[in-house]
Image (cartoon, rainbow, N blue to C red; front, top):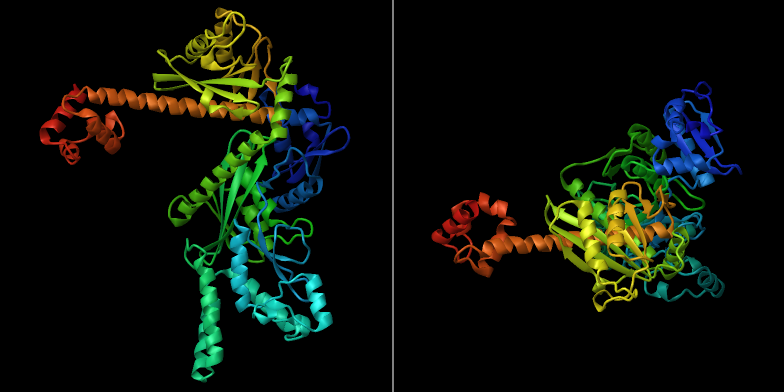
Length: 615
C-alpha cells in the first residue's frame, strides 16, 4: 500500500542529519511541519504501509503531494526553524492552541512617549507590556485603581490627554492623586516613565520588596519629622498590601514559575497555565486545541511552550519565568530548555514534580484544564449553528432522508461481570433530554448480549404502525451504540428480531473514533474537527457517564440489600457502615473494635455483622 504515495522519496535520498520537513498538497500549501534528529529515520515512519499508520497520520499523508526537508546543524536549530515555519505557514495538521475565551490583561504602553496604564483584551498592540491574564475584569480594574494611588501613571485616553495638554487643565484623576499629570508637566516625561516602570515592576514581581522600600522611606521621613510625607508613605503601604492580599500565596516567596496542567481526549486537548510570581498566583489562562494528528502529551506540551512564549505579530511575548512545571516532560527537554533560556537571556529549567506543593498545585492546574476542555466541548455542542451543521452533516454522511432530530445512544456498564446496567440517553435537536433517559438492569456480563437485551427491551415499545409508546416519546431517527463492529452486529440482530425498520443504526468505536454503519463493510472516518464527530462524541460520552452512574447506584442498592439481611442492623446503621468503610470487602477486613466505634454499634452487633458477612 505504500506504493500509493507517488511522491515517496527513496530512502537513500533522505539525509540522516537533523532537520525540518514539510508535507505539501498539490497546490503547494504546507500541510504539516515537523522536526527530526535524523530525517531519514523520522520520515521513514510516514512511508511505511498505510495500514500501519494511525488514522489521522494516514489522512495527512494521503492529502499530501510532496515532502521537502531542510538540513540544519543542530537539534536546537531544528527546533527554532520548526517554530518559525509553523508561525509562518499555519499548517492545518499542526497543533494550534487557542484561548477558550478572551481574558483581560493589565497593559502599560511603555513604547509611548507618555506611557498609559489600561485594561484590555487585545494582545496585539505594539510597544505594550502585558500583565496577566486575569479571570475577572472587575478584579483587575479594582487592583489598578488601588495601584494608581501609589504609582500615579496616566490612565486616560489619548483624546483626554491631548485636551488637557491643550487647555492646561488636568482631568479629575490628577486632582484625586491617581495621575501625576504629565499632560500639564507636573512631572517630566522621564519621571513619568520611571513611575510607569515601577508600576510594571511591582505587578510583574508581586512580592513584598516594594512594600519594604516604602517602609524604609516612611521611617526615614518620620525620623526627619516630615510627618506629612511619612503619612503618604503609610497610605501607599496600605494600598500595596491590600493588592498583595488579593493574590493567594501558594509557594515560597522566592518562586517565579509557570505551572501548566493538561487534560485531553481523542479529539481535543486543553491546558491551564498558573503564573506564579513571588510565590503568588498572578494570573491564569486556559488554551484549547483540536487534535488533527495523534500526539503524545510531551509533544503537545512542547508545542504549547512554543505557542505561549514566542512572539506573535505586534504583541510582546510573555516573560519566560525561571522555572516551568509540567505534567510531563517534552521529548526534547534539553533543546527546549536551551530555546527558553535564549529567550529569557537567563537560565530556564523544566520540571515535572511528582510530590510536594508544586505537584499539588500542578494537579489543580490539570483540574482547571479538564474543566476548560469540558466547557469547550459543551459550548460547541450547545451552539445552535454548530448543532444544525452537525445534524445536516450526519444526514448527508449516513444518507438519511431527514436530519436525525431525535438520537438515542446506548452503553453498557458492569463491575467485574456483576450489576450489569444498560443506559439509553436521548438528544433532541442536538441537546440532551435528561427526562427521556432510561436504564435497563441486565442479567448478563457479555457486552454484545447486553446490547442485544437492551435494544430488545427498548424496541418492543415501537408499535407496528411505527408510532411510539408514551414511555419513550416519539420514534428516533438515529440509534448510536458505544462500541465497534461486534456491538453493532448485536444491535442489528435486535432490530431484525424486533421487526423494526426505517431507523439508521451506527456504532462509534472509541480508539480511532471510527463510525461503523449498518450495511457498510468499512467504517467511516470523520474529520477530527467536524461538528458531526463532536456531536457523536458528546452523545457517546454522555451515555457512558449515565451508564456508570446507573451501575454505581445499582451496586450500592445491592450492597445495602445484603447488609439489611443482617439481624438487628437496620437502614440507618447500614448507611453508617457504608459511609465509614465504602464497600463490603472493607467491612469484612475491618476489626470488631473498628465497627464498635460507630454510633449504635456494640460488641454483639459488630460480631454479628462480621460473622454474617464472612459466612
